[in-house]
Image 1 (cartoon, rainbow, N blue to C red):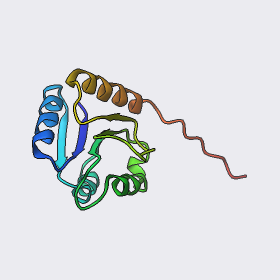
Image 2 (cartoon, rainbow, N blue to C red):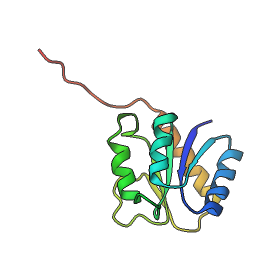
Image 3 (cartoon, rainbow, N blue to C red):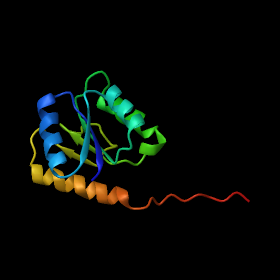
Length: 126
């Protein structure tokens, strides 16, 4: 089971995505906008982030820039819903309609990949 943040102001879409992620065994934290999403990230350890392209109060671009400045989430996988025009910092994207099976397979793949040890190397100071 993974802890997933879903940032989407469309309550119907968020409910659908939340339902099939929960049925797959994941814990889903829903935030209605980017500001609320950042608050969830501070309060809970999150393994994967799903963000709608059109978010309220904070653009998805601003949300991702803020996310990547917060050390625990520099490498956290991000799935974008609704297109990725101009988005370089996402790991997967889906249009407005998508297959639940493909979506869940993508989430599983990204969670497996992020569970691998990081390849960060540190130079020793002599």
